[in-house]
Amino acid sequence: MKFAKTYNKEVFCLEGDWSKNLKHQTSVQAVLMFLKQNRQIEYIHRHCGTKENLLYYINQWSLKRYKDYSILYIAFHGKPNQILVGKEIVTLDELADMLGPNCHNKIIHFGTCHTLNTDRRHIKRFLKKTNALCVCGFGKEIKFVEGCVFDILLIDLLQEFKNIDSVLHHIKTYYRSLADKLEFKLVNL
Image (cartoon, rainbow, N blue to C red; front, side, top):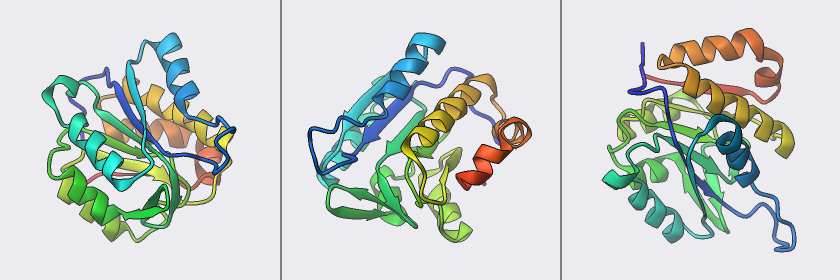
């Protein structure tokens, strides 16, 4: 069984642009504000438009001052086995190299479409390279609002349980239809 170090898990969110039209203000930041106001979950939210931005903020996340931010919430467009950062593709292997083996006791959530629609071996390799506690996310195209609602439920559950298997059991027991619809996966070693 995999156990988180603490119940309180703050969120470090890296988000891409959802639209080429900068007038559209779609963002997962409302999810984070809801969780802060209603569950007192602290968060850091940053936008990334390039691989360099992504790497910069991943390096910041690894600093000791952010050790309580044990959930990395990656919110970008995605394709199987990759995320789209601006016009650039970042594969799970590339992201694992950026993160390095520094994710012990960390949870990485892909609030992206399709990213975890990949062979389980790719996800396991990602976990081994990063030493993350678990990886979770979606395997198909999702509607933005449905994905955000599920993200709220997930992050809330991650506060309730130290045992990652208990989180998955709770999702399967109470939110199975939505999890199945979104092809939600939670994988640990």
